[in-house]
Amino acid sequence: MGEMVLYSAPEDVQAVFSLKAAEYENGNDPVRYLLDPRSVVFLEGEEHRRARRALTPPFSGRALRGYAPRFVESARRVSADWQPGQVVDLTAAFQEVTFDALMGATLGMGTADCPPLLRAELLRFVSGQLSTTMFFASAVMGPSLYSRLRAHTDAAKAALQAGRPLNGRSPLASRAHNLARVEVWLAELVHNRRQAPTDGTDALSRMIAEGSAFSDTDIVHQLLTLLIAGHDTTSLALSWVVAQLMARPALLADVVAESLACAEPERAASAAEALPLLFAVVQESLRLTPGAALAPRRLLVDKKIAGETIVAGTVVAANVVGAHSRVATWGDPEVFRPDRFRGEPPASNTFFPFGGGLRRC
Image (tube, rainbow, N blue to C red; front, side):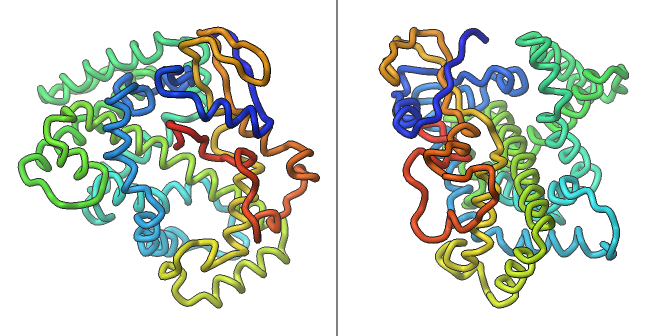
């Protein structure tokens, strides 16, 4: 991976996020070994801009508010049989909840449109790709991890298409079989959607509308990226929010009271307007436990940052955890205090749980 320099001060974070596209490439090597090279995460130049144009609208603020009924319906379904005193795996529960909304944003599909066995396969895939085991494997095996996984997956896809059984019981083979089933199904979905395109706003429909700009294989890999990046991070963020509230009964009671008093929160112009206390709690939780610790870029040219010349090839990273923990910015950063996010928003480049610049999540 080479040398890495971390920046937490707002002016230095701004310098990292202001880098031009020609001055850097993605420097997140562990993720590089878990995703296909054609993923939007690793595309550069015009290919990256075209992919961003197609993939961003389904995740805009307006689009996300449109998914509110899906979240409500899923939350009610997942929690229907919960009992007082029961121990609940929050991450698994929220994976179910977020999956339904994500299927709508990426594929334009409702819960009933996805066969149960395929739903289980997709959930298994997105839940496992960013697991501790896979990150450890990427750190140990480096680039060879994806190469080996890709070879196993291609062999498994060939077997599936020929009607042959899938062989192999190793963890890597099992992962490849799972990925092969998902890729075969997504490829079939892309083919069918090309034959009968829709005017939907989901990511798949938007890429289909671009015609030959995206090959079927490219579309499959962008969909896989969205399913991975949008699923695990969201379910973990929700889990942390509930964990923080459960540790503070009085705050939890206030959040519940606010929610009950708001009849139609989805009709508000923003979450901050509809449920200001809950919004502040979510923001404060993201400050303390962001989905990513760093926003790295590998320099392609020498660059002066914080008064020092950093040579090409070095990874420079906006330190999300460091910036969110600066005493100079927050005063008491170790304290969970949602009031920080009520009123004036944080100063620029002091709070960025989703990164920033051209590759903002």
